Length: 416
Image (cartoon, rainbow, N blue to C red; front, side):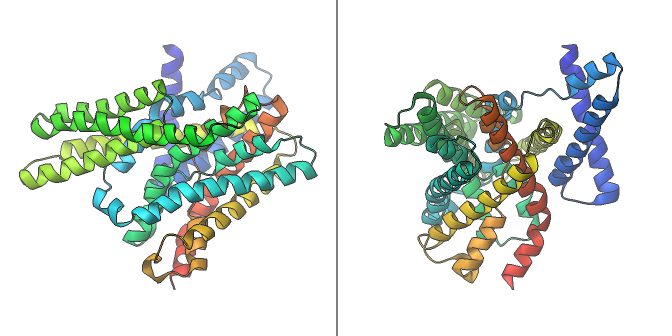
């Protein structure tokens, strides 16, 4: 309990200090500031640990740097983050853009994973890294999905048009589940050496999740529709997310997709409720989920930043990081470019090249990629694990900080 309170105090202290400093001095996007300055704090902690001969100080800093990010994200906050991101999306918008969203979220994610895997396989052969093709495809599945947290928190602040913003947000919310399904498939091939059952596995992961999320969401929001208790409405939303995610874990389906389905059902029920009772007040519910979303985002970005200190001491991290970033941009560009010819008329009069460039630079990566990379520890060798982790960390940092900071300029240039 004392360790938990210590960790909570440190994380919240960092959030407050960075948030206040950014508000008064740097004025960067909040999430980018949290990640960037947390990395700097992590580096300072590492330097103090290295230079200090005081055993109590070293023990304390060891505890500060220990965060089980995989468990925190995959088994804890991810489901609530996905719901918070999807609960304001409109089903009618999905219907209008079903073809575009499906191509971006499903086909482009698959193509991106395959392209990255093949390129990584070629590079590993040139560098004698001893990565098999299934292992490289697994790495591709880790880096392929874009991050819904970054999409909703960062990209929407840059003046994107409604349709472009919706496509980016919808893609990122759905392709998390696709990425996890691909990862389960390819990691299973690595672990067992067998490659069968791909279609069956993907079908179970995706359609099973839609079924579970639909059933749980329908039951919970039927109660939501008829209750007038403000607090009970909050509890119902929490129940729908937690129950859907748990059942997906139980039946080996994609909990990420199930939570997005719950969010879409909630959006539909809310719209009908507001039409039936125009005087209904859902401000408390909105305030709760807005605060929860900001809180979970803040904790995630700070822990991501502090966790980067694990990567700094790895050999050849500079070369591998540069290669990983380039491979991500190439594979993302290739997959979106192919997809742009299949989604129908492009929004806002974009050409295929400009549309591809915008969605390539807007393809930010986040905590899910880190969590999936961490989960390979028992599948590959220690050296391979460190290579995978280093590559994924570098990609997440580059896309969130560098691409995130320059996204507004890129969007303005492409929109002219």
